[in-house]
Image (cartoon, rainbow, N blue to C red; front, side, top):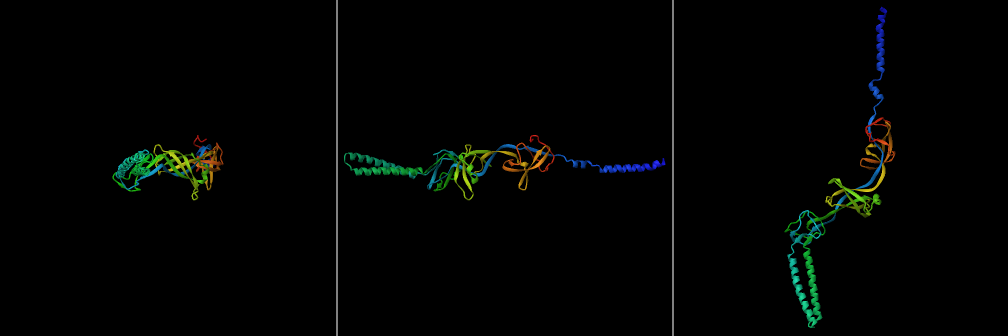
Amino acid sequence: MAKGRLFSPLIVAVLILASFLVYINLPNDEEKKKSKPKPTPVKVAKVLSQPLPIVIEALGTAIANESVTITAQETKIVTELAFNDGDSVSKGQLLVQFDDREEMARVNELDVSLSEAVRQYERIKNLRKESAASEQLLDEQDARVKGLQAQIDVAHSQVSELRVNAPFGGQLGVRSVSVGSLVQPGDVITTLDDVSLIKVDFSVSETHLASLQLGQRVSATSVAYSSEVFEGSIASIGSRVDPVTRSVQVRAVIDNADRKLRPGMLLQVLLEKRVLQALLIPEKALVPQEDKQFVYVLNGDKVSKTQIQIGARKPGSVQILDGLSEGQTVVVEGTLRVRDESTVRVLNTDGE
């Protein structure tokens, strides 16, 4: 019995020590987690074949279809202004009347002289029939009548120059004179613009010259109407290429019936060059490394890093020229957390 009690504590100690050694050599939970990493959550998208419009972008300036600055031709006093700021006027409508009293008096004087000259001509003509007047006298009086008629035509022309009429229909600007103002030749009275159509002038690189043609559709946007697109077409293409910029001048016309566009506005012009049927992926799937582009392609529950060649871009998408085929699935979110042959967990089912 004494011998049994002597060895019992020793046996117990050995067993405890053995159990401790076994415990410290077993992998804990953290090591188990490290030995088997969790799948990385990602979102994916399919490689799709879609239409890809190839467009030319340019900046253009809006120009009125017709535009003129209304000025004075003589030093005169304004007696009537037949318009208000910003009025819409029709062709031939009176805008400004200058003081024409002197010119009208001259017209009246010539009318009286012409009437007397015609009366004398008729009298001499009758006398000529009776051989009481010479042919020369009749011819001289006829020349005098014609001379007075020419003077009257000149006088009427001078009177008409004192009336400023709209040369075409359009919208007036701000007037710069008042009734009673003394204006001199060249003084600006107002402006007149026909904005029913807007011309847009822009430059296109000579590399795109072969794809330009009259009637080709264009679209334009303005910061003033950020959500609206204005449609138009090419009206003319410049006959020369600028030797400095290597670009050609192009003019498009845009219907402006609602009068939203104004001359002088800056417009961003998009010109559709052609439409390709191309393989597209979301642009955020790209993983650039130096001058190369990669994507992570989904294979089962793992991804493989694949080098690709890209082409044209459009907002949010990029064309694939080589490296992928239609129907493959690529990682679009989570690319920074995965590596080649990483195990992943797809979060979105619509990308499959």
